[in-house]
Image 1: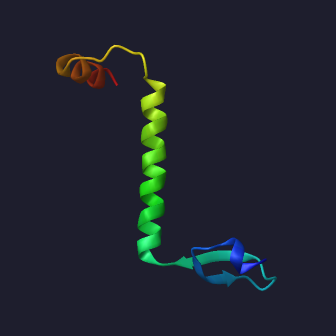
Image 2: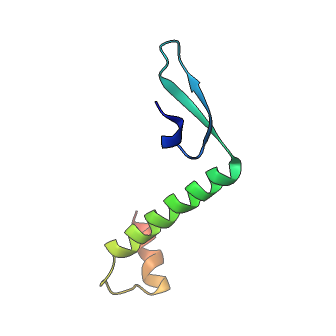
Length: 67
């Protein structure tokens, strides 16, 4: 394993065989990664409903009550 392939990693925690089990990163980097994942999920959700007619607030609430 080459550390330069893992730019956010500050430290690796390995098992007895040398397999990476955990990675330590800066909290700021962690927050940026979480934001990027959330942004990607939002984009995917928006693409999924692209072209659909939006519901009114009452229609949306009624749909939520059905679930």
